[in-house]
Image 1: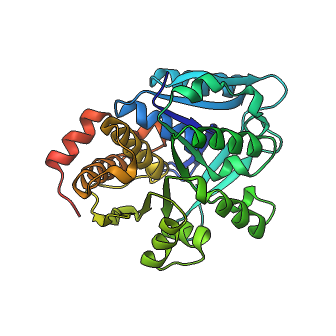
Image 2: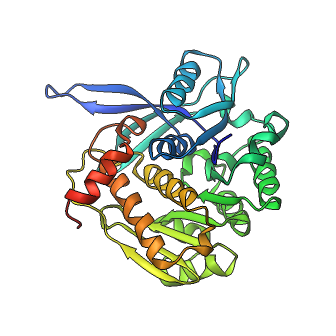
Length: 320
């Protein structure tokens, strides 16, 4: 059984690339934030599993085989004959920001029910991770919440990514309400600076992290791209710089960071509030190196580094 379980969506990313002659081609890659966390945790040396529902189609079978090829336990993956696998097309807008087009209406990943989740799998884990996209639709919303509450009662570590994808919600007001409602259940929250404001109403770093800590969160991670990250616990705040690399594609870097972070946390055998500042700095350093390396290649899961590559980066690549 796995130490780290990730629950939620897995999908196919069709990523746009422009060829030298000006043509646009879309390349198929496995994606989905929770699945990427599970893969990176496994690549970092942890035992990890993914729980979710895929279509029993060529895309779903492809995604399940990708998980297995990276050593992720797929005993909690369901191939659904009635619903199709979610697809996402990824390009860039006029400001060179990532732009997503999702084909997710009534797809497999939003049709997971709690009675389809193996409680025996939850019983054995140390950490369970989920993201906000598991909360957009029923029955997956209730399945995720029930799984999180079940694990919370058993003292598992709950990790949350309020991953913001506006087009997948009915409205901003509904999204913000639901995304904030789960905060008191969580031990670890990883946010971008934009997502910090979504879950707290404040974009000031100190105020936002303080609010989350006051709600019972044990570790707040604010990722800042090339600048690295800030991590706040009741024991203090640290700022960890990233590494100087040539960036090609930032898709999946935050999820790579999170998977690496959770893998190293599981390795300590401690809960986040038990970590000393020095231990937190070491874990953040490792996760930053992982995220930096992920940005040097195209695609999300295909760009994830191995444990050896991360350690090599930490040893030889200068910090920013």
